[in-house]
Amino acid sequence: MFVGLVAAAVLGARNWEPTEAVAAGSTAPVADRTTTGTTATPSLEGEQLERWHAIYNYSRRYKITSDLSAAVYDAAVAEGIDPALAFPLVKLESQFNHKALSPVGAVGLTQLMVPTAGMYVPGVSREDLYDRDLNLTIGFRHLRGLIKQYRGNVQIALLVYNRGPVAVDLDRELGLDPSNGYDRIVMKGYRGKGVLDD
Image (cartoon, rainbow, N blue to C red; front, side):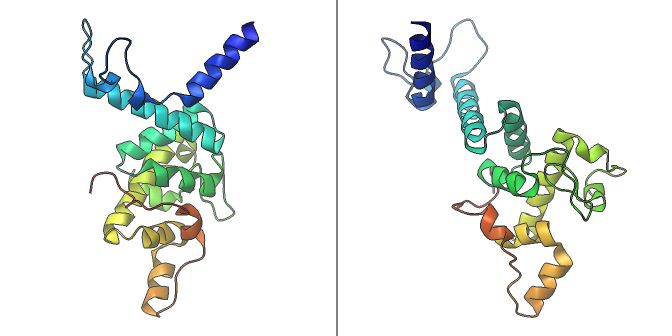
């Protein structure tokens, strides 16, 4: 009997959609109702439910802990990067391993080079970049800056993120395709503009 209850709860959680949650006896969605005795506003409740739902879905899709999923999601949103772009970038860069170190010295989840990170946090060290939250914040801030620098061209911004500006700009000046496949992998199925508020 206990197994049946657990299975029903799991199936219910998998099929639950926050936007369709309706209170008993009320036809108004949870996000539109006010609560009495609390300071939460209806829109804040809806945003929190949407955040939780997104974190849960990314956690399942990428087979990572909900804690890591929340860290990636929150850092992306805080830096104005679309989480739908942030998660594939982190997967490709580090396979969600915060201790990742590339042969050329790129560090952490977003595979930052120390000089690049130093443009955003002066004095940052290689060891500092193993900090999950700092690495995500700097990596997404760097990506947002590149998207802005390349006037919203997410493909070129991703290539510069991966290859560096000198290599990409040189290929473009010579009329060559700067793509090394990185952009296609990160953007597979992605149709957004990379940023949240532009």
